[in-house]
Length: 248
Ligand code: ADP
Ligand code: MG
Image 1: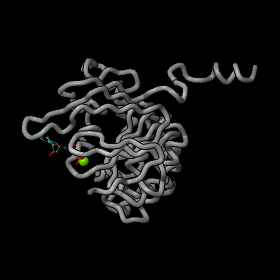
Image 2: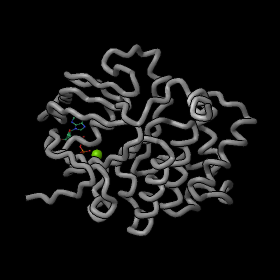
Image 3: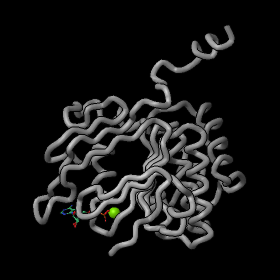
Image 4: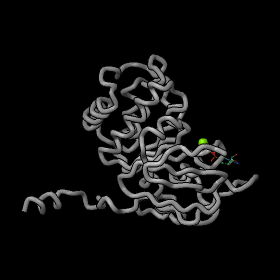
């Protein structure tokens, strides 16, 4: 009885932990010039996973992130994210698709002339959340990322670690199913890098699927998560509780 009650309250589209949320089948991406940035990539990620993507500069990590965001379309192969076929998706459906994704970059990309609160509220205004709900959601998400009390600060008044927390709050405020982070600690010192990675881990523990592109060898080795290693557009290893593979 109690069990059924719980079941009934689950959101309809909430899949069980074993369901795949990201699927790449034989995906290649060639730009106008140069060797293909991705070359026959297969990748399967389940709902609720935490995955590190590592590899040398130029190995295709950011290209993969852009494909997942549907910023790019693959040259060949199939990509499915949350049930959306990203090769065949209609343009009119892309904004709705993207609402399920949060994205964080190395360089924070905050609005410099807006304060912390407005930077996060902006993401909600775009999807027409009511002011009443924004007033509830923004403080709640800022507390989650450890920035309660910094609402009025402008980005330049914050440390790099704090700016990245604002960016993470902005990425999360619309409650995405997946958080993508492309070298989120690339501009941070070791202490702030650790704090940001721990925050991403906590977000994952609360149910969000998290993909993190990083060069941070020490953190990858310590955190014992799934590690996908790329080299020249190919996945060369994919390990549960993996480590950073040294270049030969
Ligand atoms: P990573 O994020 O692992 O450093 P990228 O995905 O950015 O790698 O790049 C993979 C390869 O694709 C590199 O050789 C890079 O020079 C090339 N590349 C990336 N973006 C473009 C582009 N817009 N036009 C042409 N080549 C590109
Ligand atoms: Mg990159």
